Image (cartoon, rainbow, N blue to C red; front, side):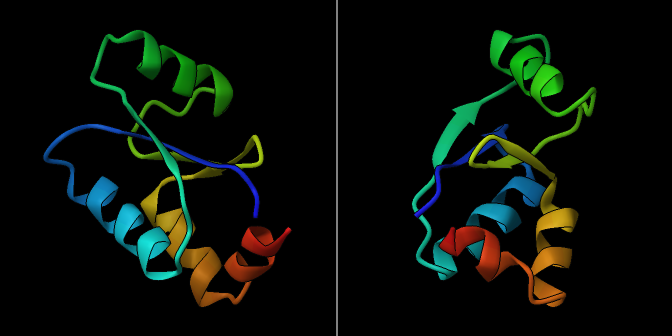
Amino acid sequence: MPKVEIYTTPFCPFCDRAKALLTKKGVAFEEFDAPHGSQARRDAIARSGGRSTVPQIFIDGRAIGGSDDLAALERAGKLDGLLAA
């Protein structure tokens, strides 16, 4: 199973939605608390090519994007392929 990382903040409904989808699929993920101004947030921005919103999701180091991007991959039937690699 690939390494899945997600940068989040507390009380973020988009973060909760992304984590719920990953959990529903049985995917283990590493979560990083990334409040505004933190080193973790700067790391997420650098890794994602400048995206400053949360969540930021990475599968095997590849920037997937946020909650909407993750859901779009699921709707298109492409998420399982990324998670099976």
